[in-house]
Amino acid sequence: MDGIPLDALTQDYNMMAGSFDRQAFAAGDYILAIGPAAESTEVMPVPDVGSSVIIEGKSYQVMAVVEPVTSVEEGAPEMGFQDGMEMEFVIPSDTFQEQWPDNTLRKFFLNVKDSQVDQVQEMLDAYTESVDTSLPVTSRKSMAEQYEAETRSAAVMGNAISVVIALVGVLNFINSMVTAIVSRKREFAMIQSIGMTKKQLCRMLVYEGLFYAALTLAVSYIVSALAVGVVVRAMTASEFSTFHFTLLPLGICTPILLVTAVLIPYLCFRNLEKQSVVERLRIE
Image 1: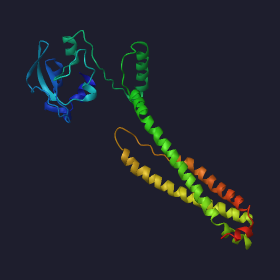
Image 2: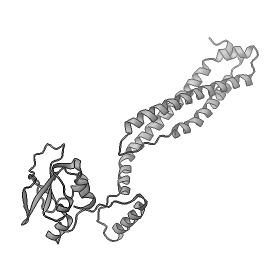
Image 3: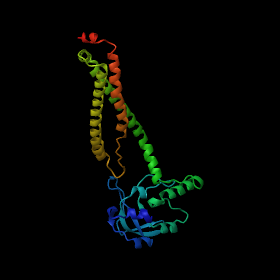
Image 4: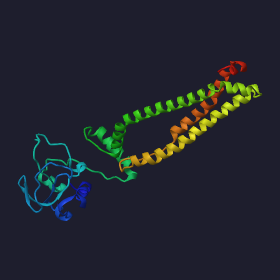
């Protein structure tokens, strides 16, 4: 290792024993031993700092023992690799190529400025399409695509549940309005019998519907803003994801509720008028 992965591996919080001297390590006589992961219960042999280790005829001195950084030190096992007890060491890339000239480096890490990400991604895409189609590349783009694929099913399920709940809410709103109007047939007949016109009664019902819709929307906006903007934001807060708050679903439901609040009272009024005032007054 060298460069970015070596810097990540030799941070102070990764040191289990010893210390790291970059110049001495680059000379090629020292190695770093990979110790067990902090959460691992597996017992694995780890040489002491300062001890000598012979790897294929060449002697190295252990400079330090470091914790494994999975994304840096993991890789595909070599052909013929057998499961069992093993020890892992890190040496400089130049030293590795001198001792094993027929082998190639296994993994490259590229640290790209934000302004150059798209350009480097295009270069990698072109290389993997035309030069080496088997080369595995993990980039910001591929990780984003993988994340979207993993969360797509959850998003579809969540959206489906949201649509069902929205439909239930709208239907419940319609049912409440229809019940409130139909149950007051006799009341409407009485106020019509003392002089209220059909136009005035229809206008009154529409205004009541709009009042119910406005009250429903006000409560929904306030409760949603608090529940999602505060509670859900706190639940999803992490360094691996971002939170985006939107009232778009409520914005979509708003005109539906307002149209419903006008249309339902009007249709109910039209249905009520099929019976005369006298017939409605006789209803027990």
